[in-house]
Length: 113
Length: 118
Image 1 (tube, each protein chain N blue to C red):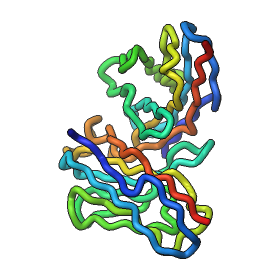
Image 2: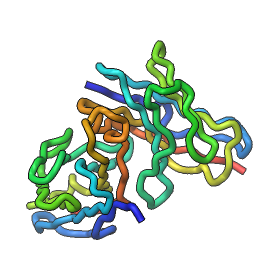
Image 3: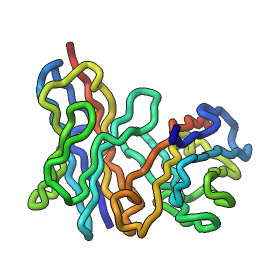
């Protein structure tokens, strides 16, 4: 079975500050890992994905994530937060057969002016 | 435009009144899935379908039914809704292939259906 833990249900940063959203996973098989973003009243949009090709993954809107197998982590970062980054972020791991996704509980990012 | 559509987007109903939420995708995807999203719990899978006439339970299937008679459509049926099914529902789809590629794991989500059962 696989699981995802997102530390911190709410994260608040100042505009221009570093964004760090934490994700730890467990999986019995080499995982595929994903970060999705959900803006208010919208569906989920894929930010980035880890496919085992490279441990540092770059996504849209300046976000990136680093896969660390030894720490079973896939933390999401952005060097400089923008007001438009305010949203809820979900980390997900693929399950058996590489289709089913198991999601973390989500982290709501607030960006203060 | 490649997309997953859901209808209705918002629905308020009463306990026990059967309802159906439709989901359609135009990407010729084999795999389709339903999730519910609840505060603090993230998204949990209700049912999924690997292809036409092939469906299976996810993590929280109780109180729900699905069908997959056509490749593009995957309706979610609540035969007798109850207040604990008040939630935000998402349909998702992904492409086929062997099922072991990241392409098959990457899912595209619909805009969501907010259901309230009173």
